[in-house]
Image (tube, rainbow, N blue to C red; front, side, top):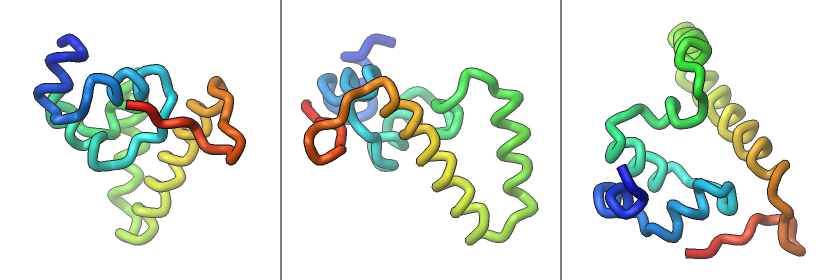
Length: 100
């Protein structure tokens, strides 16, 4: 699937997809869900190349309360965002620039 096809299928602009691909923006859940739906995958599978590792981690969530599972998921997202930021210089406010 090309970026143009994904943009059309997800309703997310091609420019924004390009910024996501190059880790120039922090992705919020709404576009992430749209992209995942267009790709027919769960959003969490977009964060790893190792499905087995992710499956084990997701399985652990079954035994947590909803509040605790939400906290764990938020922490995963923070870690992923930090890993993307390590390769990108922040602007003067410490925030990645968003351009579409």
